[in-house]
Amino acid sequence: MNYLMVFIGGGLGSMLRFAISSLFNKSGLSLPVGTLSSNVLASFILVLATAYLIPKLGAEHWSFFFIAIGFCGGFSTFSTFSLESFRLAEAGMWGYFAANILFNLLLCLGVIFFIIKLKSQV
Image 1 (tube, rainbow, N blue to C red):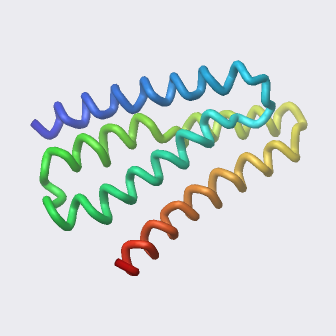
Image 2: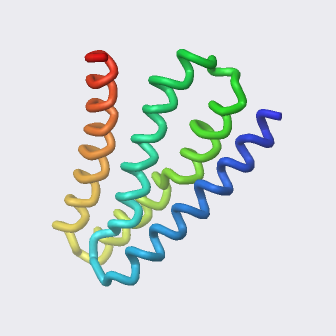
């Protein structure tokens, strides 16, 4: 059952990542904003699942496999982020290269920090 949940969640996450990337690729921006958006949203969803879902249902519940491992694994795009960063560097677009790395790291970590701090306030 857990493998099926990872499979379904991963497929849905990948489809959403593709849709978001396709939408932003039409904008003509040099910075890969679609990947950035997917990584930030996946970080947000993953921290919500781990901060709120696991304590209530446990790490062995099917929803954890569906959301945290499957959906967020398919939706988060670190490998794509790495390749896009490499291509920016290869093209000599060093400002976009640095911005892409900084935005992905700072925003994803920022979302996690914000949710963890918010949870500790509740």
